[in-house]
Image (cartoon, rainbow, N blue to C red; front, top):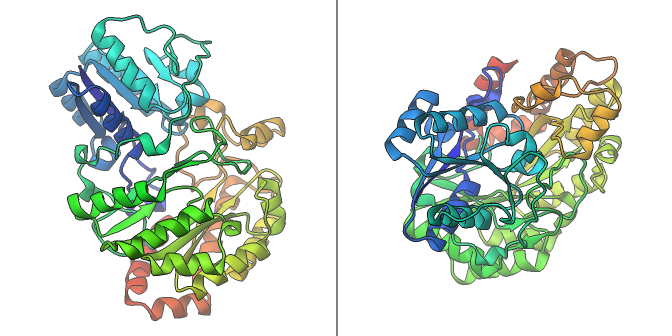
Length: 460
Protein backbone atom coordinates (compact mmCIF):
# COMPACT_ATOMS: atom_id res chain seq x y z
CA UNK A 1 0.00 0.00 0.00
CA UNK A 2 1.34 3.38 -1.07
CA UNK A 3 -0.59 6.28 0.44
CA UNK A 4 -0.24 9.89 -0.68
CA UNK A 5 -1.47 12.82 1.40
CA UNK A 6 -1.84 16.14 -0.42
CA UNK A 7 -2.22 19.82 0.31
CA UNK A 8 -3.03 20.86 -3.28
CA UNK A 9 -1.23 23.55 -5.30
CA UNK A 10 -2.65 27.00 -4.60
CA UNK A 11 -1.42 30.43 -3.58
CA UNK A 12 -2.54 33.74 -2.17
CA UNK A 13 -3.75 36.31 -4.65
CA UNK A 14 -1.13 38.92 -5.70
CA UNK A 15 -3.07 41.57 -3.73
CA UNK A 16 -2.82 39.71 -0.42
CA UNK A 17 -0.09 41.15 1.85
CA UNK A 18 0.36 37.70 3.44
CA UNK A 19 1.81 36.54 0.12
CA UNK A 20 5.06 38.25 1.03
CA UNK A 21 4.82 38.20 4.81
CA UNK A 22 6.30 34.73 5.15
CA UNK A 23 3.33 32.88 6.66
CA UNK A 24 3.75 29.16 6.00
CA UNK A 25 2.90 26.46 8.54
CA UNK A 26 3.45 22.71 8.16
CA UNK A 27 0.28 20.70 7.37
CA UNK A 28 -0.07 19.17 10.82
CA UNK A 29 -3.42 17.55 9.98
CA UNK A 30 -1.90 15.58 7.11
CA UNK A 31 1.21 14.79 9.14
CA UNK A 32 -0.94 13.43 11.97
CA UNK A 33 -2.86 11.21 9.53
CA UNK A 34 0.46 10.03 8.08
CA UNK A 35 1.89 9.19 11.51
CA UNK A 36 -1.26 7.31 12.52
CA UNK A 37 -1.23 5.25 9.31
CA UNK A 38 2.46 4.38 9.73
CA UNK A 39 1.73 3.16 13.25
CA UNK A 40 -1.36 1.13 12.32
CA UNK A 41 -0.02 -0.18 9.00
CA UNK A 42 3.78 -0.41 9.32
CA UNK A 43 4.22 -1.83 5.82
CA UNK A 44 2.61 1.15 4.13
CA UNK A 45 4.70 3.63 2.21
CA UNK A 46 3.49 7.15 3.01
CA UNK A 47 4.28 10.40 1.21
CA UNK A 48 3.11 13.92 2.08
CA UNK A 49 3.03 16.60 -0.61
CA UNK A 50 2.45 20.06 0.82
CA UNK A 51 2.42 21.85 -2.51
CA UNK A 52 2.07 25.45 -1.23
CA UNK A 53 4.81 24.93 1.35
CA UNK A 54 7.19 23.32 -1.14
CA UNK A 55 6.28 25.73 -3.94
CA UNK A 56 4.94 22.98 -6.20
CA UNK A 57 2.62 23.93 -9.05
CA UNK A 58 0.31 21.47 -10.79
CA UNK A 59 2.96 20.27 -13.27
CA UNK A 60 5.48 19.55 -10.50
CA UNK A 61 2.75 17.88 -8.47
CA UNK A 62 1.94 15.59 -11.39
CA UNK A 63 5.59 14.57 -11.67
CA UNK A 64 5.62 13.64 -7.99
CA UNK A 65 2.43 11.60 -8.36
CA UNK A 66 3.76 9.76 -11.41
CA UNK A 67 6.98 8.87 -9.59
CA UNK A 68 5.25 7.67 -6.41
CA UNK A 69 2.31 5.83 -8.10
CA UNK A 70 -0.04 5.85 -5.09
CA UNK A 71 -2.77 3.31 -4.37
CA UNK A 72 -4.62 5.76 -2.10
CA UNK A 73 -4.57 9.54 -2.21
CA UNK A 74 -6.05 11.79 0.46
CA UNK A 75 -6.47 15.42 -0.56
CA UNK A 76 -7.24 18.32 1.80
CA UNK A 77 -10.39 20.14 0.69
CA UNK A 78 -11.27 23.51 2.16
CA UNK A 79 -13.76 26.19 1.26
CA UNK A 80 -11.48 28.61 -0.52
CA UNK A 81 -9.31 26.10 -2.37
CA UNK A 82 -12.02 23.78 -3.70
CA UNK A 83 -11.07 23.96 -7.38
CA UNK A 84 -7.42 23.34 -6.54
CA UNK A 85 -8.39 20.20 -4.64
CA UNK A 86 -10.54 18.94 -7.52
CA UNK A 87 -7.68 19.58 -9.93
CA UNK A 88 -5.30 17.61 -7.72
CA UNK A 89 -7.71 14.66 -7.52
CA UNK A 90 -8.20 14.74 -11.30
CA UNK A 91 -4.45 14.75 -11.83
CA UNK A 92 -4.04 11.70 -9.63
CA UNK A 93 -6.78 9.85 -11.53
CA UNK A 94 -5.25 10.78 -14.88
CA UNK A 95 -1.85 9.42 -13.91
CA UNK A 96 -3.00 6.55 -11.71
CA UNK A 97 -6.57 5.49 -12.65
CA UNK A 98 -6.67 2.67 -10.10
CA UNK A 99 -5.83 5.00 -7.20
CA UNK A 100 -8.67 5.60 -4.71
CA UNK A 101 -9.02 9.33 -4.12
CA UNK A 102 -10.56 10.59 -0.89
CA UNK A 103 -11.34 14.14 0.25
CA UNK A 104 -10.55 15.21 3.78
CA UNK A 105 -10.48 18.41 5.80
CA UNK A 106 -13.03 21.05 6.69
CA UNK A 107 -15.08 21.14 3.49
CA UNK A 108 -15.20 17.35 3.20
CA UNK A 109 -16.87 17.29 6.61
CA UNK A 110 -19.13 20.28 5.96
CA UNK A 111 -20.30 19.27 2.47
CA UNK A 112 -19.18 15.71 1.65
CA UNK A 113 -21.69 15.28 -1.17
CA UNK A 114 -20.18 18.21 -3.03
CA UNK A 115 -16.72 16.68 -2.74
CA UNK A 116 -17.92 13.33 -4.07
CA UNK A 117 -18.44 14.80 -7.52
CA UNK A 118 -14.64 14.80 -7.85
CA UNK A 119 -13.49 12.10 -5.42
CA UNK A 120 -14.13 8.41 -4.80
CA UNK A 121 -14.85 9.08 -1.13
CA UNK A 122 -14.93 11.75 1.57
CA UNK A 123 -13.75 11.51 5.17
CA UNK A 124 -16.23 13.12 7.53
CA UNK A 125 -14.78 14.24 10.87
CA UNK A 126 -11.34 13.41 12.23
CA UNK A 127 -9.25 11.70 9.60
CA UNK A 128 -6.66 9.55 11.35
CA UNK A 129 -8.68 6.44 12.17
CA UNK A 130 -10.94 6.50 9.10
CA UNK A 131 -8.06 6.97 6.65
CA UNK A 132 -6.07 4.19 8.29
CA UNK A 133 -8.98 1.74 8.15
CA UNK A 134 -9.68 2.75 4.56
CA UNK A 135 -6.08 1.94 3.62
CA UNK A 136 -6.30 -1.45 5.30
CA UNK A 137 -9.55 -2.35 3.56
CA UNK A 138 -8.22 -1.32 0.17
CA UNK A 139 -5.05 -3.34 0.69
CA UNK A 140 -7.09 -6.41 1.67
CA UNK A 141 -9.66 -5.95 -1.11
CA UNK A 142 -12.46 -5.65 1.45
CA UNK A 143 -15.80 -3.84 1.12
CA UNK A 144 -15.65 -0.11 1.89
CA UNK A 145 -19.35 0.50 2.56
CA UNK A 146 -20.19 0.91 6.21
CA UNK A 147 -16.81 2.28 7.27
CA UNK A 148 -17.45 4.87 9.96
CA UNK A 149 -16.49 8.36 8.80
CA UNK A 150 -16.42 7.51 5.07
CA UNK A 151 -19.00 8.83 2.58
CA UNK A 152 -19.00 7.04 -0.78
CA UNK A 153 -21.89 8.60 -2.68
CA UNK A 154 -23.80 11.90 -2.54
CA UNK A 155 -26.35 11.84 0.26
CA UNK A 156 -24.35 9.48 2.45
CA UNK A 157 -24.39 10.36 6.14
CA UNK A 158 -21.87 7.96 7.62
CA UNK A 159 -21.66 7.34 11.33
CA UNK A 160 -18.69 9.12 12.80
CA UNK A 161 -16.09 7.19 14.77
CA UNK A 162 -15.75 8.04 18.45
CA UNK A 163 -13.66 11.18 19.07
CA UNK A 164 -9.99 10.33 19.42
CA UNK A 165 -8.12 10.74 22.69
CA UNK A 166 -5.48 13.39 21.82
CA UNK A 167 -2.93 11.60 24.01
CA UNK A 168 -3.35 8.43 21.94
CA UNK A 169 -2.12 10.09 18.76
CA UNK A 170 1.49 9.67 17.62
CA UNK A 171 3.58 12.76 17.07
CA UNK A 172 2.96 14.24 13.60
CA UNK A 173 5.27 12.75 10.96
CA UNK A 174 7.34 15.90 10.53
CA UNK A 175 10.14 13.89 8.93
CA UNK A 176 7.97 13.73 5.78
CA UNK A 177 8.35 17.46 5.06
CA UNK A 178 11.19 19.97 5.06
CA UNK A 179 10.61 21.95 8.25
CA UNK A 180 13.00 24.69 7.13
CA UNK A 181 10.35 25.84 4.62
CA UNK A 182 7.93 26.93 7.35
CA UNK A 183 7.50 29.83 9.74
CA UNK A 184 4.71 31.95 11.20
CA UNK A 185 4.02 35.42 9.81
CA UNK A 186 5.96 38.54 10.70
CA UNK A 187 5.81 39.57 14.38
CA UNK A 188 4.66 36.06 15.38
CA UNK A 189 8.06 34.46 15.96
CA UNK A 190 11.42 35.36 17.41
CA UNK A 191 13.86 32.51 16.68
CA UNK A 192 14.44 29.97 13.93
CA UNK A 193 14.11 27.07 13.34
CA UNK A 194 10.49 27.55 14.38
CA UNK A 195 7.58 25.19 13.95
CA UNK A 196 3.99 24.80 15.06
CA UNK A 197 2.09 22.45 17.36
CA UNK A 198 -1.59 21.79 17.98
CA UNK A 199 -2.38 20.27 21.38
CA UNK A 200 -6.18 20.29 21.54
CA UNK A 201 -9.30 19.69 19.46
CA UNK A 202 -12.81 21.08 19.63
CA UNK A 203 -14.07 24.36 21.05
CA UNK A 204 -16.94 24.91 23.50
CA UNK A 205 -17.46 28.56 22.56
CA UNK A 206 -20.05 29.90 20.13
CA UNK A 207 -18.33 32.45 17.89
CA UNK A 208 -20.54 32.77 14.83
CA UNK A 209 -17.74 32.54 12.26
CA UNK A 210 -16.18 29.30 13.51
CA UNK A 211 -16.63 25.92 11.81
CA UNK A 212 -16.92 22.85 14.01
CA UNK A 213 -17.55 20.25 11.31
CA UNK A 214 -14.35 18.31 11.89
CA UNK A 215 -13.70 18.34 15.65
CA UNK A 216 -17.03 19.40 17.14
CA UNK A 217 -17.73 21.48 20.23
CA UNK A 218 -16.28 19.19 22.91
CA UNK A 219 -12.87 20.41 24.02
CA UNK A 220 -10.22 17.65 24.18
CA UNK A 221 -6.63 18.43 25.07
CA UNK A 222 -3.36 16.56 25.31
CA UNK A 223 -1.96 16.16 28.78
CA UNK A 224 0.86 18.49 29.81
CA UNK A 225 3.20 15.49 29.82
CA UNK A 226 2.28 14.65 26.20
CA UNK A 227 2.84 18.27 25.14
CA UNK A 228 6.21 18.40 26.91
CA UNK A 229 7.28 15.12 25.27
CA UNK A 230 6.52 16.47 21.78
CA UNK A 231 8.37 19.71 22.52
CA UNK A 232 11.32 17.61 23.68
CA UNK A 233 11.31 15.73 20.37
CA UNK A 234 11.16 18.97 18.40
CA UNK A 235 14.17 20.36 20.26
CA UNK A 236 16.21 17.16 20.21
CA UNK A 237 15.38 15.49 16.89
CA UNK A 238 14.70 18.54 14.72
CA UNK A 239 16.77 21.25 16.40
CA UNK A 240 13.74 23.51 16.78
CA UNK A 241 14.29 26.67 18.84
CA UNK A 242 10.73 27.95 18.99
CA UNK A 243 7.18 26.56 18.99
CA UNK A 244 4.09 28.38 17.77
CA UNK A 245 1.04 26.76 19.38
CA UNK A 246 -1.84 26.98 16.93
CA UNK A 247 -4.63 25.92 19.32
CA UNK A 248 -7.53 28.36 19.08
CA UNK A 249 -7.77 28.48 22.89
CA UNK A 250 -4.46 27.28 24.29
CA UNK A 251 -5.33 28.32 27.87
CA UNK A 252 -8.87 26.89 27.89
CA UNK A 253 -7.80 24.51 30.68
CA UNK A 254 -6.01 26.73 33.17
CA UNK A 255 -4.71 23.85 35.30
CA UNK A 256 -3.28 22.12 32.22
CA UNK A 257 -1.42 25.28 31.19
CA UNK A 258 0.02 25.78 34.68
CA UNK A 259 1.12 22.13 34.82
CA UNK A 260 2.86 22.46 31.44
CA UNK A 261 4.62 25.61 32.65
CA UNK A 262 5.79 23.74 35.75
CA UNK A 263 7.14 20.89 33.60
CA UNK A 264 9.00 23.33 31.36
CA UNK A 265 10.62 24.96 34.39
CA UNK A 266 11.50 21.59 35.97
CA UNK A 267 12.81 20.09 32.71
CA UNK A 268 13.80 23.17 30.73
CA UNK A 269 14.23 23.06 26.96
CA UNK A 270 16.01 25.59 24.78
CA UNK A 271 12.65 26.64 23.37
CA UNK A 272 10.72 29.86 23.32
CA UNK A 273 7.04 29.65 22.47
CA UNK A 274 3.89 31.59 21.63
CA UNK A 275 0.20 30.77 21.72
CA UNK A 276 -3.31 32.00 20.94
CA UNK A 277 -6.33 32.22 23.25
CA UNK A 278 -9.38 34.24 24.30
CA UNK A 279 -9.16 37.38 26.42
CA UNK A 280 -11.38 35.81 29.09
CA UNK A 281 -9.09 32.79 29.55
CA UNK A 282 -6.07 34.51 31.09
CA UNK A 283 -5.20 36.12 34.42
CA UNK A 284 -2.05 37.74 35.85
CA UNK A 285 -0.85 34.62 37.70
CA UNK A 286 -1.25 32.42 34.62
CA UNK A 287 0.48 34.93 32.36
CA UNK A 288 3.45 35.24 34.73
CA UNK A 289 3.79 31.45 34.83
CA UNK A 290 3.74 31.30 31.03
CA UNK A 291 6.42 33.98 30.77
CA UNK A 292 8.59 32.09 33.26
CA UNK A 293 8.23 28.91 31.19
CA UNK A 294 9.49 30.43 27.92
CA UNK A 295 6.41 32.06 26.43
CA UNK A 296 7.30 35.35 24.77
CA UNK A 297 4.12 36.24 22.88
CA UNK A 298 0.38 35.70 23.18
CA UNK A 299 -2.31 36.34 20.57
CA UNK A 300 -5.89 37.18 21.44
CA UNK A 301 -8.88 36.62 19.20
CA UNK A 302 -10.57 39.91 20.04
CA UNK A 303 -12.33 39.84 16.65
CA UNK A 304 -14.85 42.61 17.29
CA UNK A 305 -13.20 46.03 17.56
CA UNK A 306 -16.06 47.36 19.70
CA UNK A 307 -18.72 45.91 22.00
CA UNK A 308 -21.35 45.99 19.25
CA UNK A 309 -19.17 43.97 16.90
CA UNK A 310 -18.25 41.48 19.63
CA UNK A 311 -21.96 41.00 20.27
CA UNK A 312 -22.67 40.35 16.60
CA UNK A 313 -20.06 37.60 16.55
CA UNK A 314 -21.19 35.91 19.76
CA UNK A 315 -17.83 36.43 21.47
CA UNK A 316 -19.22 36.52 25.00
CA UNK A 317 -16.95 39.32 26.24
CA UNK A 318 -16.58 43.07 25.78
CA UNK A 319 -13.75 45.40 24.77
CA UNK A 320 -12.97 46.21 28.42
CA UNK A 321 -12.09 42.55 28.94
CA UNK A 322 -9.84 42.65 25.89
CA UNK A 323 -8.09 45.78 27.17
CA UNK A 324 -7.52 44.21 30.60
CA UNK A 325 -6.11 40.99 29.10
CA UNK A 326 -3.62 42.85 26.90
CA UNK A 327 -2.55 45.03 29.81
CA UNK A 328 -2.05 41.98 32.05
CA UNK A 329 0.00 40.21 29.38
CA UNK A 330 2.20 43.25 28.88
CA UNK A 331 2.69 43.56 32.64
CA UNK A 332 3.87 39.93 32.66
CA UNK A 333 6.47 40.80 30.00
CA UNK A 334 4.74 39.20 27.02
CA UNK A 335 4.38 40.63 23.53
CA UNK A 336 0.74 40.86 22.51
CA UNK A 337 -1.07 40.31 19.22
CA UNK A 338 -4.73 41.04 18.60
CA UNK A 339 -6.78 39.58 15.75
CA UNK A 340 -9.81 41.46 14.40
CA UNK A 341 -12.58 40.66 11.94
CA UNK A 342 -14.14 43.39 9.80
CA UNK A 343 -17.33 43.25 7.76
CA UNK A 344 -19.46 40.93 9.92
CA UNK A 345 -23.22 40.93 9.21
CA UNK A 346 -24.76 43.79 11.16
CA UNK A 347 -21.71 46.03 10.95
CA UNK A 348 -22.14 49.53 9.58
CA UNK A 349 -20.07 52.37 8.25
CA UNK A 350 -20.11 53.78 11.78
CA UNK A 351 -18.75 50.62 13.44
CA UNK A 352 -15.96 50.32 10.88
CA UNK A 353 -15.09 54.00 11.21
CA UNK A 354 -14.89 53.63 15.00
CA UNK A 355 -12.75 50.48 14.85
CA UNK A 356 -9.28 52.12 14.84
CA UNK A 357 -9.99 54.06 18.02
CA UNK A 358 -11.36 50.95 19.72
CA UNK A 359 -8.31 48.93 18.63
CA UNK A 360 -6.04 51.66 20.02
CA UNK A 361 -7.80 51.41 23.39
CA UNK A 362 -6.92 47.71 23.58
CA UNK A 363 -3.38 48.66 22.50
CA UNK A 364 -1.83 45.32 21.52
CA UNK A 365 1.72 45.39 20.20
CA UNK A 366 0.59 43.97 16.85
CA UNK A 367 -2.78 43.74 15.13
CA UNK A 368 -4.02 41.57 12.27
CA UNK A 369 -7.24 42.31 10.40
CA UNK A 370 -9.22 39.78 8.38
CA UNK A 371 -12.59 40.09 6.69
CA UNK A 372 -15.42 37.81 7.77
CA UNK A 373 -15.21 34.52 5.85
CA UNK A 374 -18.61 32.76 5.69
CA UNK A 375 -17.75 29.07 5.82
CA UNK A 376 -20.76 27.07 4.71
CA UNK A 377 -21.47 25.35 8.03
CA UNK A 378 -21.35 28.45 10.23
CA UNK A 379 -23.97 30.81 11.67
CA UNK A 380 -22.11 33.59 9.82
CA UNK A 381 -22.90 32.00 6.45
CA UNK A 382 -26.53 31.29 7.39
CA UNK A 383 -27.07 34.86 8.54
CA UNK A 384 -25.35 36.48 5.58
CA UNK A 385 -27.32 34.35 3.13
CA UNK A 386 -30.65 34.90 4.91
CA UNK A 387 -30.13 38.68 4.92
CA UNK A 388 -28.92 38.84 1.33
CA UNK A 389 -25.50 40.14 2.38
CA UNK A 390 -23.24 37.65 0.61
CA UNK A 391 -21.10 39.56 -1.88
CA UNK A 392 -20.20 36.44 -3.86
CA UNK A 393 -22.01 33.35 -5.07
CA UNK A 394 -21.53 29.97 -3.40
CA UNK A 395 -19.40 28.92 -6.37
CA UNK A 396 -17.14 31.93 -5.95
CA UNK A 397 -16.98 31.37 -2.20
CA UNK A 398 -15.56 27.90 -2.82
CA UNK A 399 -12.39 29.53 -4.14
CA UNK A 400 -12.25 32.68 -2.00
CA UNK A 401 -9.45 31.77 0.39
CA UNK A 402 -7.89 35.22 0.84
CA UNK A 403 -9.43 36.81 3.93
CA UNK A 404 -8.00 40.23 3.12
CA UNK A 405 -10.89 40.83 0.70
CA UNK A 406 -14.47 41.41 1.94
CA UNK A 407 -17.02 38.71 1.13
CA UNK A 408 -20.00 40.14 3.03
CA UNK A 409 -21.72 43.40 2.10
CA UNK A 410 -21.97 46.24 4.61
CA UNK A 411 -24.99 48.39 3.69
CA UNK A 412 -23.98 51.70 2.18
CA UNK A 413 -20.42 50.63 1.41
CA UNK A 414 -18.84 49.10 -1.65
CA UNK A 415 -16.41 46.22 -1.21
CA UNK A 416 -13.58 48.55 -2.18
CA UNK A 417 -14.66 51.00 0.53
CA UNK A 418 -14.69 48.20 3.09
CA UNK A 419 -11.15 47.28 2.10
CA UNK A 420 -10.11 50.92 2.51
CA UNK A 421 -11.39 50.90 6.10
CA UNK A 422 -9.08 47.97 6.89
CA UNK A 423 -6.08 49.56 5.21
CA UNK A 424 -6.63 52.86 6.99
CA UNK A 425 -7.08 51.04 10.30
CA UNK A 426 -3.66 49.43 9.88
CA UNK A 427 -2.07 52.73 8.94
CA UNK A 428 -3.54 54.71 11.82
CA UNK A 429 -2.75 51.96 14.31
CA UNK A 430 0.91 51.59 13.52
CA UNK A 431 1.53 55.32 13.15
CA UNK A 432 0.38 56.03 16.71
CA UNK A 433 3.14 57.47 18.94
CA UNK A 434 2.83 54.54 21.38
CA UNK A 435 3.21 52.01 18.59
CA UNK A 436 6.13 53.81 16.98
CA UNK A 437 7.90 54.09 20.33
CA UNK A 438 7.72 50.32 20.90
CA UNK A 439 9.25 49.64 17.51
CA UNK A 440 12.06 52.14 17.96
CA UNK A 441 12.89 50.49 21.30
CA UNK A 442 13.34 47.03 19.75
CA UNK A 443 15.80 46.32 16.90
CA UNK A 444 13.94 43.13 16.02
CA UNK A 445 10.55 44.85 15.96
CA UNK A 446 12.03 47.68 13.92
CA UNK A 447 13.43 45.27 11.31
CA UNK A 448 10.15 43.35 11.10
CA UNK A 449 8.26 46.63 10.79
CA UNK A 450 10.42 47.72 7.87
CA UNK A 451 9.65 44.47 6.05
CA UNK A 452 5.96 44.73 6.89
CA UNK A 453 5.87 48.30 5.56
CA UNK A 454 7.07 47.12 2.15
CA UNK A 455 4.28 44.52 1.96
CA UNK A 456 1.73 47.02 3.20
CA UNK A 457 2.66 49.68 0.65
CA UNK A 458 2.39 47.08 -2.12
CA UNK A 459 -1.08 46.12 -0.82
CA UNK A 460 -2.28 49.67 -0.13
